[in-house]
Length: 537
Image 1 (tube, rainbow, N blue to C red):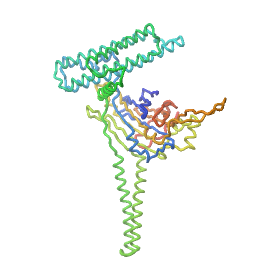
Image 2 (cartoon, one colour; image 1 turned 180 degrees about the vertical axis):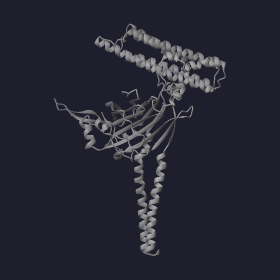
Image 3 (cartoon, rainbow, N blue to C red; image 1 turned 135 degrees about the vertical axis):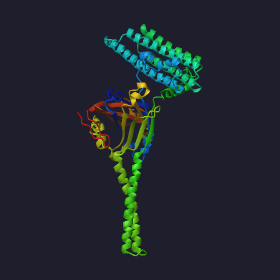
Image 4 (cartoon, rainbow, N blue to C red; image 1 turned 90 degrees about the vertical axis):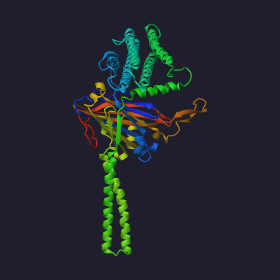
């Protein structure tokens, strides 16, 4: 799906698998303010037929279905910067040969993992660039007018430059690792870690080069395009042969389910990228405040009961029936008053306090990077911002759904405050932002759905014969997003609306009803309390 503005922060919404959709946010503080604050609101408009309410999908269950990953944004280095840049992890590894390890062995593994991360990022950008070039060439062939830089020769030059760069990165990394292991005592764990990074680098190169060949499916199968495909596949074959020579099981087989290949690829990706993941420490300040308020409610109800008891004692003898009845009535009212006060105070505090507080910590330095606060509201407690309500008046079905047909509205709100000065001090200044990945499992929405397929009677108009037509049963859940940022001189609020089409098997597709749209500029949102509607343009 389309991404948001890269000036302030980037947003991306897509289907992750049949049961989960993913919201990916990239916060990029500009440094113009000591703290950069971000607000993320996600509103689910769920049909009542799915039987969703605070009892069937309570807050604890929603939080359990929300999977959150916070990590540093992958440093952006080109192939040339990886090979020659002063901050390149490859150069830092090579400098350890003449100067010594210059620290614990874990720093060697850290540099190797960072090299894998930045190389993967460079390969991903190379793959996207090749895809864009191919699209330009295809559109130019259809319209007989190519983009200025789109030509087969330019495509070949771009590919060959990247092929040479990746081969040089792999050669220098492998040579450096062999010399480090020969010259220094790295222990037992570090050499194994370096071998795993080497395997992941080989798999990453193979993965993206194979993807580029697939992207060239519609290109002509003659001339320079055949040569280009052959050179790309030569790299893929070379890396497969390298891993096969190392007797590694991460080699694709034409037969079988390639379970081992898939497992190792997933494991190695997590292993190499775990240096970017930040540590989170969750707490619930709201529960502590609720306990205080519950104590106040208990004290108030006890004061009422005690007052009734003292009144009864002053008017009637303790052994009388009247005293007995007043004491029982006082206890009855005391019990109900306590529960009523608890619900009232809890509802009031729920409007002011967030339910979960998460401190984001750099696992290396143990410094605080930022603070995240989250809360979930249901039904009448949700005040749908007017700009989001307007998004849902695009057609008659949406308009009627908001007025005559009942919906359950669930709002997830997340507020993040980042220390803008902390990020430049992480990873030698390579990090420019934080990536926040939120995945929501929709399995609970599927429980009360009908069968995904059914048959409908059909009458043929010529001979009036009776047949059956296959019909698909699906449900629509609209998901609206509101993003706001306060980054010193930069303030912006944007909204977006997507639709999930679901059946009992999970998510069939996601459609973008309203792309991300700016609704307010230079209007900072408050630090605490309910969020007002922004000033629309």
